[in-house]
Length: 285
Image 1 (cartoon, rainbow, N blue to C red):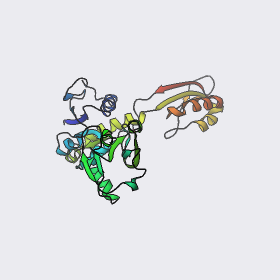
Image 2 (cartoon, rainbow, N blue to C red):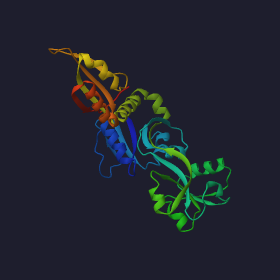
Image 3 (spheres, helix red, strand yellow):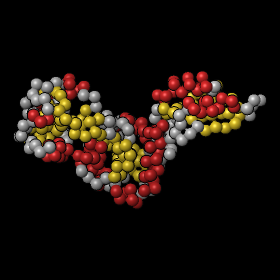
């Protein structure tokens, strides 16, 4: 059963998406200007398209799955199934204005011109707050429009706010949060569910392993309880008896990398020894 996955052909989502697919075992010739390619799985192929077009491709059945931003899914308003938050591409859709113009969203005057590529998202936002504005659809950089006098406001995506500040724009309101998502065509999800779930599980297992480490150690029998008290674990540490002259236990567990320094120090003080730290490629739950 063949599965086609639509992936961004450029932009901030492309490389993280391809890296995730590689780690999940779907490797291929991703370089250059290829518009489609076969993966290492003979039944899975990729097509490359603009991230903003991918929701439409998936909804029409041109692709069974797609990787794109949640903001593009909402903007498109098409019938797709969001299967997984992929954890990268996190950003906000915001309303911004020139720093010398107004201070709050409440100061926006009726009839103000809003420049954006998120026409539907912007329209719904201003309708929800009861403000009648004029939407100017653009496809390029929105930040320039207040400066050249063709718009009073913009609705755009920002990760850090640095680009907005650089163009002397300030955020008036947050519209929504977004991140990269794995989406599916509803018919494909119904008819090819088993294979699609395998792909979703593979991607999810890679995401869950991000920032996690496997820590292993030997613990003398009389120190076991003390060590276990300081070891966090996903479900509980795994313990196995070591064949040694004196009774000894092998203890291992999975922890966030951010806890590594503290856990190793506390485990060592509690009696752990021969401590080993290993990387984790997948976590399947």
